Every structure is written in structure tokens, then in C-alpha cells.
Length: 212
Image 1 (cartoon, rainbow, N blue to C red):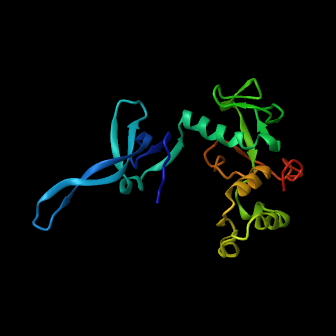
Image 2 (image 1 turned 180 degrees about the vertical axis):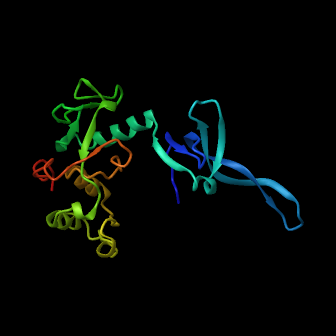
């Protein structure tokens, strides 16, 4: 099922763009056994507006299946990136700060003014992160991850498909801390264009600053 977040920009099959404002309960109709129609059924719909802000409508979950994600809206981009970087402050994540400029370590972020390291606007940086692909986990990292909790289990489809895995974990705080310490993109920022994929040389020792 397609899921969109508040602030996402989506496109209809005809290419028309809309901004998602959230999910709303909308009254629908249902037909009773005697043939009468009543308007008392509430269904979840996306509340969307045209990207120029002039039009507003509701999009059913079924209709949304035909829409495609385009990009994250500006305020949503800042919210997602700010939240993600705040959790990485103590782990020495590297930032892209402009074409031709050397990478900077994340040292400070002001989530009110959206300023990074005291002088860089948040929307001008992109962290270098590792994709959440099972092949990106070293053997040691896999063992460390499994040691966090007995409830962690890798889906058996890994061997067959190779690029997807499922983790069930009770100690979610330690799990997230592990992913931040090892610079994994658990917020999906890379696919949203908010982060760059780190190559094997970006973090030559991913355990250098991590807690595990």
C-alpha cells in the first residue's frame, strides 16, 4: 500500500502535482439493505492541495495507489533531516556542504533556526550515510546487531533476494543507537534526496566513534 507523509509532493497519473497536508476522516455513503443511501460512513483520505495552493481536495486511499511520490516539501525536508541529524551528533557523521568543498563533521545543529555547525543552512547540507542493505553490514556488525536483543531476527528471504531484510526488536532505543553509530540511513533519506550514499572509503572505520 502506498503511504505518503505530510509535506510530500505527489503526482497524479496525468502529471498534476499536489502537496499532502495530512490524513482526514471524510464522510462517505453506503447503501442499506432496503436500497437507501446514508452518508454516515467515515473513511481515511489524504487531504491534498495543488502545488500553487489554489486548489484543495480529498484523495481516497484507493485512488492514492495510482499517485507517485515526487519529492519532499521544503518544510518536511528540514523536519526529516533535522530529526535525523540530531540523533547523529555524537557519532561523527560526515556532511556534504557544497560542490568542491571538503566534507565537514556534524558538530552542532539548531533545530529552531535550522543552522548546522553555527553557519550552514540545513537545506545546504547532506549527510553521507550507508544504505539499509544487508550487504552493507559487515559480519561483525551483523553479530553486534543480533547481540542487542534476542528478538532480532533476519528474514529468511535475505538469501533469496539479497537486498531486503526485516528486523523485529524489543529494545528499539539500542537498535536506533546502533544504526546511528554505524551511519545507516534508517530514515530513508537517500531515496528522498536528503542524503548521499557513503562509499566504502567514507567511513574507513565505522566503529571508531560508535558505541558498539
